[in-house]
Image 1 (cartoon, rainbow, N blue to C red):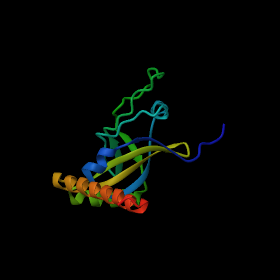
Image 2 (cartoon, one colour):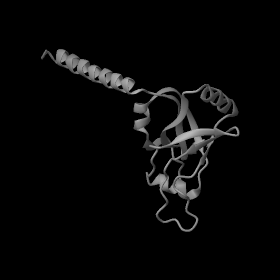
Image 3 (cartoon, rainbow, N blue to C red):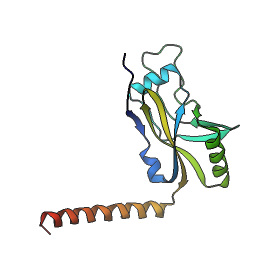
Image 4 (spheres, one colour):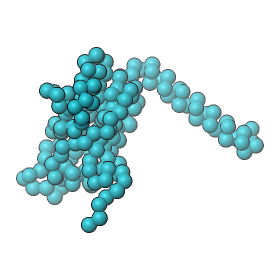
Length: 158
């Protein structure tokens, strides 16, 4: 059987980009059971309530919902269990010092397969206020209007 190549996205957390300002991102591995991987291969996962925490020098991904594998038996996993995150010690120490400062949190942005292994993107993020969210929406709308106007100008329609 040939090895898988490339990336295949499983789930994305679009709400995180809306609710948080992303300061830094990290590609991390996850420690999963067999039925969790099979459920992810079926394309089923939810990152909406997920976050990561650092306990005793280890990073744990919490509240990420990976539903039970349909053909699983009594060995099936629990959907919202804590999952260990695989990172380098230096990265963990750096994240620990930054999250201790206050106001910063670790949020999963997406889950994907990379060369057959499940990976996640963790983001060091700061929560946005409601006026920041409104400002971002207004900025996005104005960029969209500029692109439309430029497209009309290029086509000669003014």
